[in-house]
Length: 307
Image 1: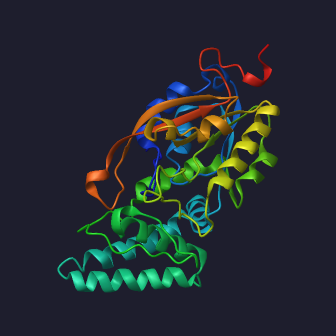
Image 2: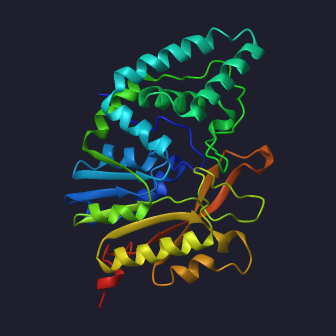
Image 3: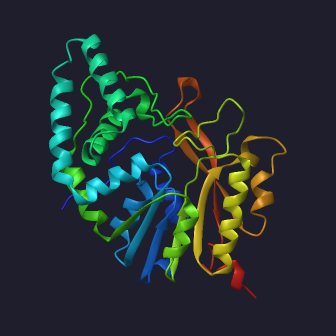
């Protein structure tokens, strides 16, 4: 059976961090039955890796504030063949326009307008979401303050729009996954002990010009980063395990201690990640990021219950 992998391209996707995430996992804990919770699911790279490699996951909870994203997960889980049928049509029509860039642009922007109207049925809306993701510039998902998707067309000649084999594998993997839409804090209500949370929130930008956190119309600013840290402390007090990815401000910006201040009771480690999405190709490449945990990687015991 084919192993499920992310069905979207996604800014900040965690495929290139899997090795570091694996090293930082509380392995002794994860050798037992547990619940996996991902409050900012994005493309689900860590989700699918966990489901593929840890058979003792009894159930998983995923959440995102982006309802277009979570609708796509739900449709893949429940109506994969209907989705594949529409995506196959989109792919055939788009590929048939290969000889004319003007016609491809017209087709793309018609689909973007249709998507932004958000008046089609949920299966078609999911198909439009995936089509735009696979054909837009750099696979970005970016919306304006009116929640309008505004990424221009990409330069791919014959992009894979419908990977039916993977979509069916994803549908199978999602059978043990509950899909939520909304604020990440609601996931605490589903955190049956023992639970392991992985957080991949919109990153705090390294400077004013590098900000990219427009996955949803709501801004994820410093106040939101602080609110998240308070939530993590609450999970720690309840003796749940968690890991969080974010920018490595200290490793990239002199005298910057934002995360050291708000996660002062926890473990912060720097890792190298490749970032391939940037309008300026010269700014793509390796960048330091942070992995923050509420447990010691040496003995996998929660700091909250250390003597």
